[in-house]
Length: 258
Image 1 (tube, rainbow, N blue to C red):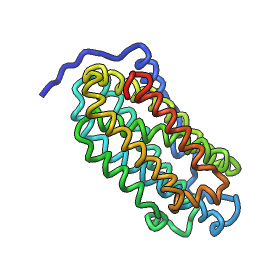
Image 2: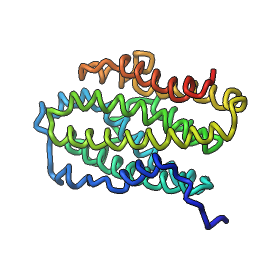
Image 3: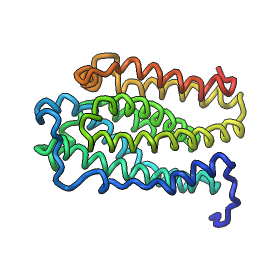
């Protein structure tokens, strides 16, 4: 068992790490124990539920998947970042529980009945079964970037509810740090495996996972989440296109991969 590590963080990584450690928000600062949304009534808010339940499931599943990968990491930059990232995911998981109670007080203790999308199960199931740390980091980056675009679209719609709006804004801030640091870890490992191995093993995996991630939201324009976004007036195809284009730049074009 290795127990001594050199500090191998880059200057840019150190800045992101310090920002994450100093992040001040707490779930209890956003939600009071008995807060209920004053926007519309619960029945009308149920049109949003499939998306919000899927995001809650995704955050909780991501939270549960970090332990194995922290143990698998063999350098201090990766271990410590994933630990800080894990703390953020714990806040998101706790916060989504509070958000669902806030929006759907009749569903306290049975929020799982609001989950309608099987595609979210497929993506996170494949993420948990990733063969190695680099594949898992790729999945995490894909989820973070799709999540960022989704949360930005949701924030525009939920900002009329100050509590929900503040919670989503906090997540958006966290996601920006996650994308920056995970991107740097993927970049380092791309350089280690080399372009030939990347193109043969990791690029096809990334391409397939981008499609699975897109289906969590769009589901070939036929799923519960797609219709839920439509009920909220959100163009899900537009933000999925933007997320896919950013991932193409980050995972392929920047590194000369096919």
